Each structure stands twice: as structure tokens, then as C-alpha cells.
Amino acid sequence: MEHNISGRTQLYCLIGSPIGHSGSPAIYNYSFDRAGIDAVYLAFDVPLDKLEEGIAAIKAFHVKGFNVTMPDKTAVMKYLDEITPAAERIGACNTVKVTDEGKLIGYNTDGIGFTDNLRAHGVKLQGKKAVLLGTGGAATAICVQAAMEGISKIVIFNRMDEFYENGRQIVKRLTDSELNCSVSICDIEDDRVFSEAVRESDILINATKVGMKPMDGISLVDPSLLRPDLVVADTIYNPLETRLMSDAKAAGCRTVIGGTGMLLRQGAAAFKLFIGQEMPWRELQEQFFSDRGE
Image (cartoon, rainbow, N blue to C red; front, side, top):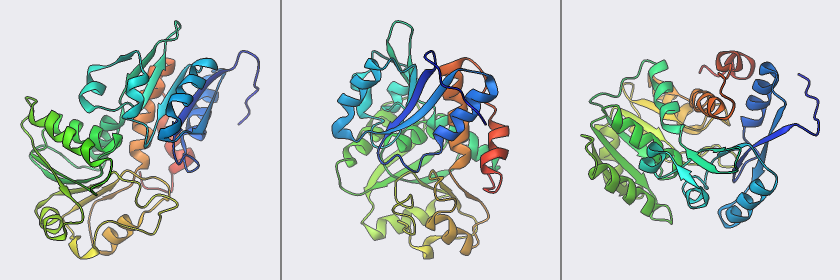
């Protein structure tokens, strides 16, 4: 793959923290080359306390569009000029398109990327019950999209940290909506409540950083709670197999899903918003993730 940078090369990027694990630059740059687009995609480590400066830099350097990952997906909204109704409902943006006039328009493609990935593995959401770990931007998008697609119950678990209030807001938004879904939030350190919720659920979803480098080898779920009929889905794609996934396979769970499919499907939606063309995601799957079972 060869890319000649010129004075006309357009810049797209990813912001968040940590960022070194991200596969997005490889995916987007490969797609730009395949489509013959004079553009490059970079990743910038932008923690929450540097987000305002990061957005100012994006404007100064005339970035044409950018993606947002943890922990910036919710906080970025206050710096945008316009937010789509879906992103407003989710309360987080993972994709920002920059218009020719320099306006920043926020979208969210995480939720549909996740549910499309479930469907690709034969998992239906209608009438199911789920335990969702995490209250960040991806967790919110998954929660809202799953509710829109007919899931009957979601129990969110998170530590009592600065993100717990995000979870309360998810519950409020979905409770106040017309969606027929029961949503609640609990402290993940309440072992009894957590264990009971997992035992009653059809799907267990990890949307936290736990399991991602440098926290690989760690899981929030006791392996004794895993069982063959429980669908286990992780949003993490690096490492290839998280501790949660390996524990689930060892417990005989028949459906264990990693995060690469979600990454590709949400990325394809963002690419179309940026470029107006389809991302060659099936080709990308073969090129970058053929050994990942996604």
C-alpha cells in the first residue's frame, strides 16, 4: 500500500485516550487508498482535560472529519455546532463531520455497529434481557440502539465513579422515552445483585476498557457466572481475545463475540458520512481481521 502525501492531502483523525491500540488509522488509510482519495487518517491522544484544546487544534488544522473514542464521546458534544437526533438521544458522538463552512456536526454510529455485529452472529435482540458493563459513550449507544430494536430489559453495571452519573442519565432518557424497555443501573461491586442479573440475562456485554491493553488479562466477570446459553459480547478488539472472551469459551458459551465486527461496521457508517462512498469493509475484514472470527 502506497500513499503520496501532497499539499492538498486532506486530514481525518481519531481522538481519545489511550489511543495507541487503535486499528482505525490502518482501516481508514487502506480505504482511502482503495477509493483513490487523497486523504490520511491519524490518531491523537486527547484526554478529557485536553479536549477543548484538541477541538481547537482540529479547527485550526482544517481537519475534514474525525472519530471520537473513550473517554471523550460525551464531553465532545458541547464543542459541536450541530448534533443529529440519534446522537442527542444517545448523549454521545463517535463521529464528527466538518462541513465546507467549518461547522462540526456530531453523529453516533456505535450502536448500529454493535447490533449489526450481533445479527451477523445470529443473535436477535427482540424480547431479550441483557447485562451491560460500562456507562461511557459506546455503552450508551449500545443501550439506546438495543432498546430501539426491541430488547426488553437492560441492567447497567458500573463502579461508583465519575461515569456513574452517565448511567443514571441513560436510564432517565430511556425511561422517559416511548421505547418499551426496562432499564436500570447498579453498582458493579454489589456481587449479589450482579450475579443475579447475569444469571437472569440472555446477553452479557462488556463496554468498558477492562480487558483492553494495558488492562488485558483482567475481567470484571467471575467465570462461575458464565454458562453455555449466555451470549458474551465484548466491544474491545485489541487484544484479539479478551480475558472475558477466553473465560466464556472455557465455560462453553456457544456465542462469544469480539469487537472487530463492531469496529468495522461503525467505521463503514462513519466513512460514508465523511466521503460519501462505501467503505470496503468485507475486504478490510479479510485484510486485517481474517483470523479474528468476526
